[in-house]
Image (tube, rainbow, N blue to C red; front, side):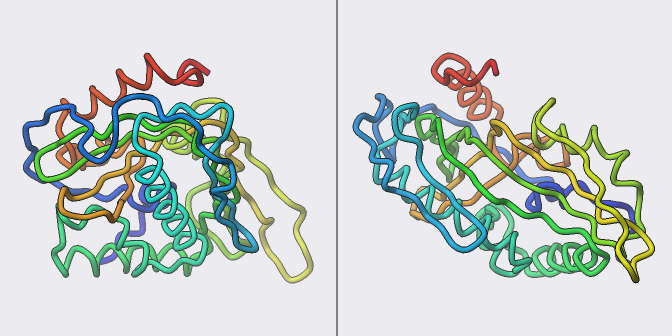
Length: 256
């Protein structure tokens, strides 16, 4: 039966409840150098009419090879575009299916996302600029890169939405997007609407985990708090701690 409780997955659509076997990890940069990348061009800028994803220029701190970072960024654009379009089948291609490719799981995830889309909740990313990338940490059958990006994102509640109060979701929003990054707005009720258009606007630095199977160049993504939603075994604690420690020591925005 489809749950009617507001799911945390909708604030970062790929936070899904999993219980998977973790693996031992070693922090090695097997898909790129662990030294800082130099000379990255700001011309790597992916756009459509509503979304822009880019690599920062003068303030970039990247510890993977440039071609790896560009590949990750291309996949990140596809991930956000799928969310904007509510194309959940495409979005699932950017979930780490090498950890759970069960057809029943995929179908139930798509049904859950459809459920809330039909009830007036939508996620929309306007801009993401990658400013930091950790080395690629070898983690069993996958490689893990921690990204930090300057993000502008909206969680929107259309006038026909009748679920839990959006205004009361501050803690949930900040858990996904960082404390102090979210502001709540309401637009006036228009003729024919019983409720206003309500939304959270997120502007600021936000982390995201990029994962790729060791035999693939396709990158998938998990939000920063994925381990708080029953998905702790999506990566080992060694890889997670290694990424967070490296960012704290090498990303100038880490304390902002």
